[in-house]
View (cartoon, rainbow over the protein chains, first blue to last red):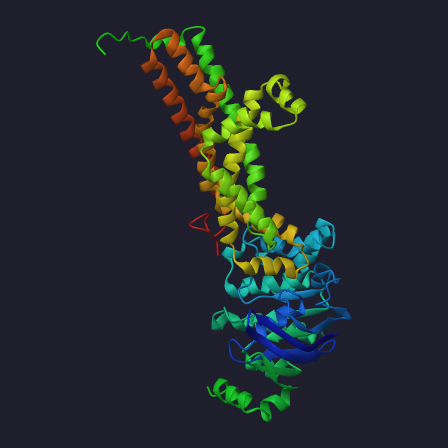
Length: 242
Length: 243
């Protein structure tokens, strides 16, 4: 469903992505990991066109992201995204955060959109916080609302950009649980994360990046048991030591 | 000073009391109409200063630099005395002769366009204070850039800049006194006029001072209440939190 083909990107003269190629099938969960600065976040931001890239191509459900003729807003409406720092709109309640895009982009009726928002909040265990403002929610609660907000657009795929990196350890689980439930429902997901526990439980494949390159792209079991590249081996030994 | 004929009663003597009130009315009209223009144009400028398009940003920056760096009085004279000469003859004559209340509209235009550059800069700062991730979140949900500005960036920017916008409103209110230079019979102009008739300059200018200060104080206080209502939940001890 998502095909990334020989994508390269530069910021000025600095190359941040080099020849990245991978693909994500419908219903597949792919975890992208690697040291910071390796280009993981940049790569998934290329998938919905938040970041432009100079070479290669990315297609989502047959639509080319880099094509100038592509209506990016239309494409993005079909891909959900969850951010490291939640990015809920501070002047709107949880419900309003969720209904904004369905009403303004999809032209949904307000009553219907609110009902659906409440159902989604229920799904992530946040129904009782529907009328709270983001500032009155904990990090984990905000992130669950952000997941509901992305789901409200009925996306064909979801992108997660380090969804638990800004959370304290106790609230990480509640967000991971919500993501796990989503994966079990068959959602196509690309997840940038350092949570190897999540990767080993939920992911079908793991993509390991270093220095803007994809150095390992393997089924989960193979990645954890027999990583090919020395870089991935070193990374895993450090991250799994404790 | 020993020969000064004090007469506070002059302030409530007819017809002067009505002159003062009508002056106050014109002051308010100039300030409010100018403010509507300033807020509308300033919002456009604030957005234009932050959009990705370079040409739009440069044009908005040029506007701000011109209006911020030329004395307001000179701007008023340019609009009033110079603009009609530069226009085609018919239009120039219409401005000078046929436009009803030409001084009033010129004052509104000068004060509005000048204050707009300050409102624009204030809103630009407000927009730039918002994390870029908010824009990413909006765009990633399928909103267009215009919708991101309309539903997310501007509503938040207005809320965080209420105190700065209040002082811009007070500025335009006080700057409206300059309208007397092109013949608007506003509060300062009326005050001077009565003082010339009656020689009670001290009473009259005291009265004008008190009126200006009082209205500014009332506006400041009212905006403080408005601010606490509009304030973003969770920002600097806003509402009692229940989390």
